[in-house]
Image 1 (cartoon, protein in one colour):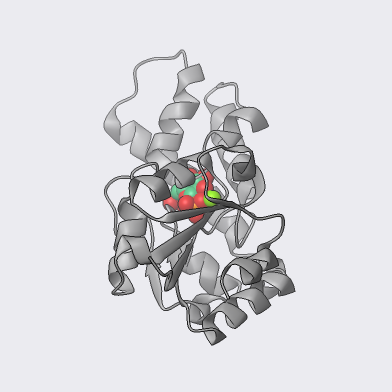
Image 2: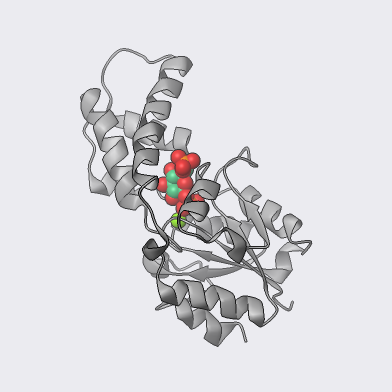
Length: 213
Ligand code: B16
Ligand code: MG
């Protein structure tokens, strides 16, 4: 099928907020006496906030936490995280990324965001990328996070395209699994290029222009 739409993951593809997630979770984990390091942080890529907390709590050996306590911990993490996001600026997006998005659009592709993050719209507005997209599907319009394909299926629906007409650009294994499960073309960048399930591997973001003419 001819590709008419391209769906982009946010964290790890367009912006790099891993370090902010890490610092915010680390602060919360330290407070609870939980061991947390960058390797565990890598497992949180593309995973929802509450599912991330469950991964972090694998190293928690204290009293059983109620659902409300977990919500409070996640909310505290999000406050720290948003204090970092508030400092993001348009300069935090590579010029190569910005110009590639503009050129893909000029070539007639519809562009959507497909992010698990509930902060996606805030991030896009901080870095001045909101108007680069025709549709935004994020953590606020889904009930299942990646590897479930829901976020990408919604993005395709918002673009009025069927899944087979869409490509997904992802940096996380969970995102590649979600794209394949959704019946889309899976384009890997960064860490995801070491996965065997993708259809296309990008060395750099602007390589998209070689694959989508
Ligand atoms: P929030 P993506 C994901 O974004 C991040 O990769 C993941 O680390 C994070 O836990 C998730 O968003 C939820 O983020 O707490 O802001 O709702 O990679 O799908 O763009
Ligand atoms: Mg990502």
